[in-house]
Length: 113
Image (cartoon, rainbow, N blue to C red):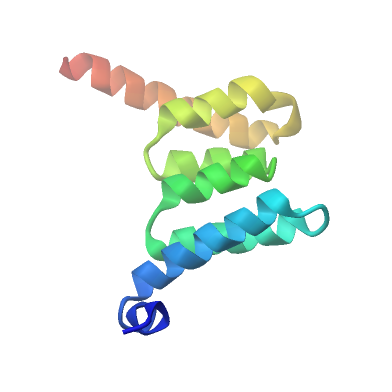
């Protein structure tokens, strides 16, 4: 059975393979990088891997979208790291929202310890 047939039977595997292929294209591209990264993100999301999708947004220098996706996926340290490094390139309302939620999560987690 060829790899194409395996992908037809397992959509998650197909999305992962497609995402990885488009990531390679994005890295190698001199033009249209953003388009390749966006397709990469869509495929990772459809595969169910928001963490890799957020990383692709970060590679594309889409800091707001990366931080929002990290937050959505519960990776608050990564979201806060992006804000720390790129706050000046992000909308203030998004920065404040993510930091507020991260503070609540950190506070809740410290109470549970």
